[in-house]
Image (cartoon, rainbow, N blue to C red):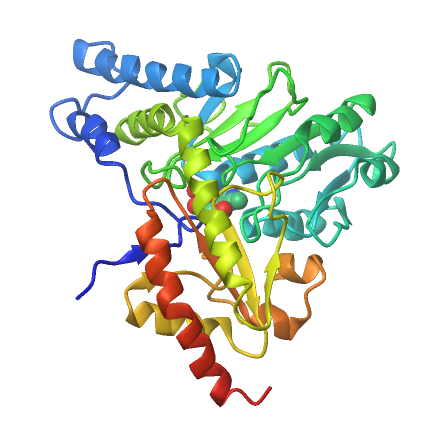
Length: 382
Ligand SMILES: Cc1ncc(COP(=O)(O)O)c(C=O)c1O
């Protein structure tokens, strides 16, 4: 059987062996509880603080502004609900977009039943939010703006600096979900007026089940998880020491402009060849305003599911919708939001790359794909 080719890195990534190596001592002999005052506990605490420093530095934040969580979903829930409930006295209006991850959109569905009003601003056909539209949407009751940084289906990178300035002008909190963009484009809380940032480890060759919420100093946010007072009382629970150590190591290994260049090179090769296949359309920006690792293509007239299924038989793994919602049958709302027709959404495949992919792998994909498309089109009623 040929070696598998993994092109679903926006769903999750393979753990870097060096990350695993850094984690293992904390799953074995270094099993101490970071709250214990004895040497074993303090060793765990020191390791957590080292990871906190690495992550803080990577976004130009202060270590005290980094809160470890169980992942992107928890960080998004914490940020949005935490701001909403702590700032109810100021207003009940929140602004977001239709291209957010389900771990954001489903929080809003719940908040709507709790008396909050949510506005969804439109994007252009590439998935960009206009700062003018955002400016117009903010009212006296607005307490939070939450906009995804790197979109998980088609890779659009929002201009946080410009959007953040609008939020600052109106004195409104600004949250961004940066799970997909972290280490793939710059995040700098000194330049970008973002108050809360969601990050996670498993999209950057780290372990699953660990994330971060960056919370700017002075932000009024409600604590959700009460208990032993860990994470300066903002998120109680015995820390996932090995996971946090792995996250820190993944950031150290991932922050390298050469990785970005290498992924973008593969992305460009892939797009150049994909558009040679008849009736193929690329979604999202193809230039530097898109993530270096996501290629989202519509194969008109055929089902993305069928393409992904036939690729799977060749040990090539790609995706149709977002992994987090692919068990749902309705067309992906983010793709509808950038103007795709439902039948186009059905014909969509997402190829997401990582720094571990090679040109040879892309060549193999491109050797198989035109034949698969041709075969499926023969059976297509469209
Ligand atoms: C943009 C985005 N936000 C949040 C999440 C959820 O993160 P986690 O899987 O760590 O809960 C994901 C993962 O699919 C994601 O792509």
